[in-house]
Image (tube, rainbow, N blue to C red; front, top):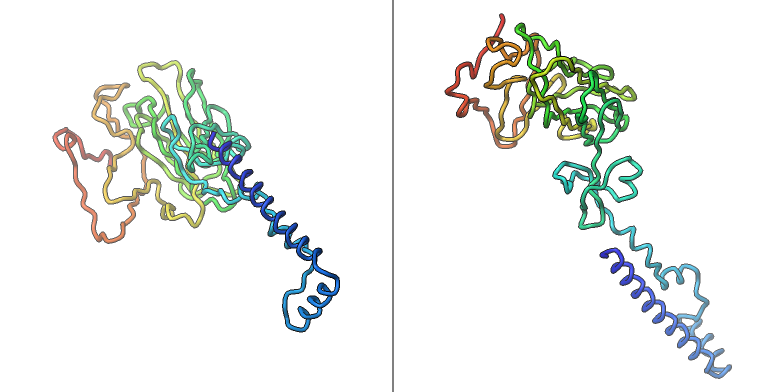
Length: 321
């Protein structure tokens, strides 16, 4: 409705301007033609001698200036392809409706004051994506292997961040190894590899360095014969260009920003291991870097444990040597 009203208004303005300009042109021609021939000649001569404006035929440039094309005004409605919140509360990218369709997304709500749509991208098993902000969702029926190929959206992509908004797999075994269920990233990953992960990873994230024109494979492997856990995942894929201020320092598996937050080991929780009550939830063979960004105006970092974790046994512990 808003677009129809805008088109109607623009058409009305165009008609008014066009009619007004036509009346001016007709009035000029009438005035000039009604003058006696000798007076017209005198005026032309006087205009030449005195530097006055000499009547001339309107050029194409004048015509383009006088008669405004109303449809060219639509080019003035521009908006950035920034992040937006969709009608279903997930994060998307603000595009025009045609741009969203061309990229294979779904319009889920509006943005940019109604001129754009909040375009979301969702993929399930055995698909691929090159869109920033794609969600990799678990299917209704989970198969033994579910993969997503992640292609860098352009040659200037340096890092990819995987946000585990939801990720619940089976816990590690009594040795801390992820054997029955696990998540892994292989292929187009530069530098340090992402460790094999399992258990409850909701709220965690990992970062890897991308290789241009070389996709990475994000895989979730599940032993469907083993029950006892409600497996699900919703993983958001974010791609960062090499000049992005959100880029993590090289070698960081995790990168935290802001003046406060929570840092925990993978699969940290306060419930027993589903495989064996006496087994640890701590994953084995982890060696990685967690990085913090020092915010403007701050010079130090204070670490602490907040309730209820501070009263629970094992809220901070190390296993192995």
